[in-house]
Image (cartoon, rainbow, N blue to C red):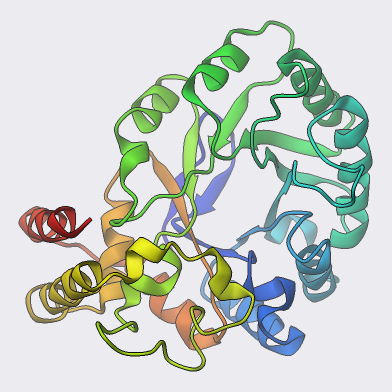
Amino acid sequence: MKYRELGASELKVPAVSLGSWLTFSGGIEKRQAAACIHKALDLGITFFDTANVYGRGAAESVLGETLAGLKRDSFHLATKVFFPMSETDKGLSRAQIAKQLDASLKRLRVDYIDLYQCHRYDFETPLSETMEALSAAVRQGKVRYIGFSEWPLEKIEAAAEMEGVERFVSSQPQYSMLWPAPQDAIFPRCAELGIGQIVWSPLAQGVLTGKYKPGRAAPPESRAAHPTMGAFLPDQWFERPVLEAVQQVEQIAKKEAGMSLAQFALAWVLRRAEVSSAIVGASRPAQVAENASAADMEVAAELFTKAEEILSQAL
């Protein structure tokens, strides 16, 4: 597994990392989740991303239980805070950050979190309060580095201009061949600020594996067919023109690049130097292995260009 620097931090993270959004929060059985985690470790994937809201603590608990007993410096944990954990527990206030951080540490069974991220921007809490609370967590030794997910560019810049607070080292945007927008403004500005990208949904929640065929029902064991995991998939991605375009790109991947569509899509994400790691989900160890191999794959730029043209005409 290749490793990349995470922004201006001292963290080196695997180019492909393992997420826990829908799978570890109830999408698959605990034993399956544990098998995926162990497979990831075997392959050199040492960075695990989660959030307190995933299954209302369930995903963090699965990671904590599975990783318990391993040397703490042999893996990196990233979690997030913002979304409601109850009717009153939500947001990025000083009190909430302190409360939710302690709860995450307990569920993860660790003394510190490597990367603590703001899951979204909190427009109801002053930015200064949020940054001071995050900085206090770092100075207390509970957190090593801080990051954010899906923040507006102006708020990223405002945080960078504040004095006396810790600096963000990571951004976590959605990014894939079906969702390329962050590369236009977020990527270059964050690079200037020493902020690396840890992208989520690089396979467009499974659409960029080619498993969904135009005019056919979703496979019974797929995310789209799952009663809870399928709820977050954009309808646009299942329109016939998009699925037909994905099938065309799959042929490019297989016949011209000599790899699976999933590997091709991950290689497309990882072609950008600003991307420190691509977070993948998995319900089976074999999926972890296939995705991990993309970190070592080289693809001719003209094949990516051809794929981009096909998809852009469908979206």
